[in-house]
Image (cartoon, rainbow, N blue to C red; front, top):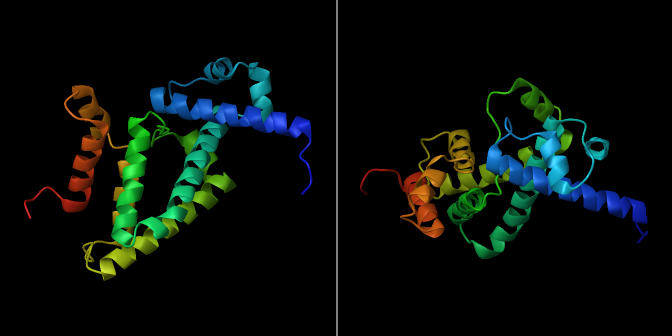
Amino acid sequence: MAKVPFREQVLKVREDAIVASVNRLLAEKGFDLMTVDEVAADVGIAKASLYRHFASKEELAAAAMVRVLNQAQALMATLPATEPTPLGRLKAVARWTMQLQLAGEMPSLPSQNSSLRTTLMGHEAYLTRLNEVSEQLGEWIVEAQQQGALDDSLPPELVLYTLFARACDPVLPVLKATGQYSDERIIELLLQTCFGGLCRP
């Protein structure tokens, strides 16, 4: 195996630190309030050095999303060995996304931002990973519907979007702020409403 040059190792470490900082700041403040200056200061580098890695604030956000999708793929790869049913795997992914949000590690991106949307729609790594995650979740959704574990009258894409919505569910921080529930209890309550609905069985 070829040895990676020291300079490339340093650049990779710096890039990882930048993306980790962006991830945290996006979770704390959201895209609109986060600034490039703030990211550079948080990492301890000059703004010009940051721009050698990422050309814009939008590119920073895209890199943070790729990081989360990579983590999701790593988790999903382990689930067939630990969760025997497709429904169990879907619940595990939903649980993980909510744990990430409650831990302050889920990037918060606005749904209405044309420059950000343009960057994301042109970002190959982001689109590739998003499609891969969506396809795997879609397969599990269809399998769960075929097994009668999920309502097969619902379009699979609707179920998929519902699961994606758990990653930015505003109910999570509201319940956490009350101080009445542990993180685990909050997640259990949200899983119950997501998969079981609001009506008494």
